[in-house]
Length: 490
Image 1: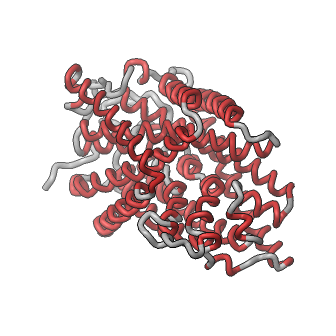
Image 2 (image 1 turned 180 degrees about the vertical axis):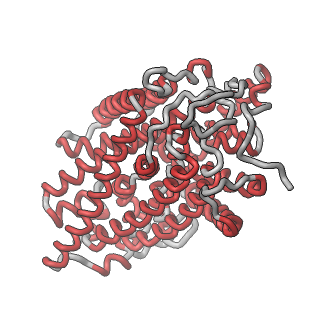
Image 3 (image 1 turned 90 degrees about the vertical axis):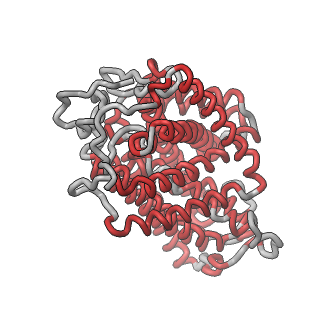
């Protein structure tokens, strides 16, 4: 465990009293930090992958639930930004809870975040392979082929994450610029084509489509509630910028701004994109039964060439999202390992002196992905991926509760992000929202197995936690350095 306080640090280091020797290099500028969070959210990718579920559960009218999800997630982002404006360390919520509550609570934050990110990396890359790249290349649907492509993509991403944080920032920025461009161009072109040809259908915005007449539409766990899942599973990961805070320039300003700006931008862009797509549907029934409704809508309105361009853009956006997830997860492992609170911590805390990146931690994420691809098949993999959508809601809920518990101890940094007098009402409403989100995610019958998977991951963590308590208790008793971010209660 790092216990020695650094007396003299690099001039650009933002954490003078954190207790760690600076090992990561600050190379990410303001837009690159924003790109990290936005790429994780990847609004075009989220809509591409979940629009079919929306049409089949709540119908086209369900797109308006996106607004509720966007507002709720923005409130959570504002609370997250309050922490990011005061503690700029890799590990985000793990560090916040460890330093402001106690290391034992912080460890649970870190453990859940690790598994969420590790599973998410596999989920994004598997979707890249099966839903975008294989259709783009004209390959027949094959689970085995998708698995091989997923592993190959994971290897490439791990190589890039290890190679350079600056390179990561450049690739992510490019992917985000491309994604925003695709969404903007598609919305404009669809609007022009529909205006000229009269092929748009405004009434689609208020129809239930194939769900009309469903008896359980308004029931708990029914179709309308299920329509909320698109926003809940897409507008997450905005806190990923905080996981790379030690590699960001001026992190106390750039990171919180990136967190809030990314979810707001994704919320607005996603709503506009959804409205354009829904109006462009020519036959609601046919599109609703399609496995890839977004691609079908583009093909029917703009032709096969536009569809292939869309798929190519989705591939690049998914690749950027997977790259960010892997990088964030490797920093999570590194943060816990340098505090001796992660399995094989002596290895996982190592940073390559040339690339200044956590190589063993990145290779661990790659190994987890390869193992999951090799061992889980069909429904088992799907259940694990669904479980990963429950984890962020639990983590965000815990962050909001933590903020309400320690907010009076937080020191406001001059010029830093702050909600001021609105902090309590924002946090209170955010807590209510997270409770609603968790209820929506765990209520459907399809969430039963994923919920047990989450409980299993927690139980696995409890086992390792007990091991630390028995064999290495001191690592859970104190934090390295001097906490310059919190003041004593009045």
